[in-house]
Image (cartoon, rainbow, N blue to C red):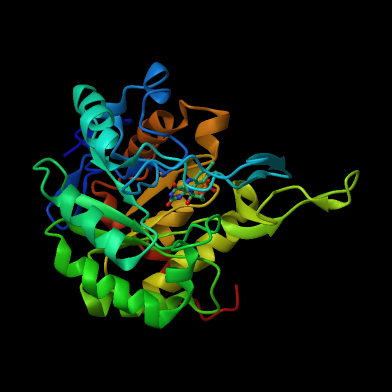
Length: 323
Ligand SMILES: Cc1cc2nc3c(=O)[nH]c(=O)nc-3n(C[C@H](O)[C@H](O)[C@H](O)COP(=O)(O)O)c2cc1C
C-alpha cells in the first residue's frame, strides 16, 4: 500500500494508490511496458525501480532469440514503428542473470511470455511459475513482428481459446493476457479470456503499420510491416480499454502513448486498474516516477482517498444532455 501525506489547504490527506491483481498487490498502478524497459538494467541508471508498481520485462522465449535482421525502429509523427522481433536472452539467462538483478533492485517483476507455439508458452509459464517470487505472468498474444506465434494467437479466436485454456492450467500465477488491438472487436477476445479464467488483461500492444523507403522504393522493414506505438495511438488505445471494460470485469492494464498525468487519468477513467508507460520511457526514462508523484498530488487535490474511486468512472452514468 502506498501512503503519502499531501498538504492541502486545511487537512492532511492520505491517498491509497495500491491495486491488486489476484494475489499480487502493486504499491501503485504505474508500470513499465514490456520491451521498452528491457530487463531494467539501463533504466536503473535513471530511476529507482523499486518505486514502480511493476516492470514487465522483454518478451521471453525458451531459447535466446537474436530478433529481426535489418532496420528495427524508426520515429514516426508522435511515435515509433518497431520491428524488434522479440530479441531476448531466453529462459535460462533470464532466470540466472536478469531476475537476480531485478530482485537486488527491489523491483516487482512481471515476465512477458512470448512463446511461438502453445507448447512453448505452456512450458515457459510452468517454469516461471515455479519461482516463488513471480506472482503474475503476462502472456503476449499480440506481437506483430514475428512469423510464428505472436499476433496469430491474438487475432484468431479459436487459437486464442486453445492457448489460454492450456496456459491457464499450467500456472498458479495471476495470468494477464496482452490482447492484440489488430482485431475487429476486442470485446470478443476479452470476454472469452474472462470465461477461461484469465485474471487480468492488458491492452494495447502495437498496431500494424508500415513505412516505405522512397529512395529504395521498398518497405523500410525487412518484415514489410512493423508495430506502431507512442502518443499517436493513444485515442485508439483509450477507446479499446473502454470497450474491454464493457465486455469483461477483470482488471485491465491500459497502455498506448501515455506521456503525462492527464493521459494516465484518461486510461484509469476508461476502466484501467493500472497503466504502463512504453515508448515514452525511451524519450524520458524518469516519466514513470513523475507519474506516481503526480497521481498522488492529483488525488489529494481532488480529495480522492483511494484510486478505486476513479477507476472506470467514465462509464457511469451516460449523459443525457448530448454534451
Ligand atoms: C521497441 C518496442 C519493443 C516492444 N517489445 C514488446 C514485447 O517484447 N512484448 C510486448 O508484449 N510488447 C512489446 N512492445 C509493446 C509495448 O509494450 C506497448 O504495448 C506498446 O508500445 C504500446 O504502448 P506505448 O504506446 O506506450 O509504447 C514493444 C514496444 C516497443 C516500442
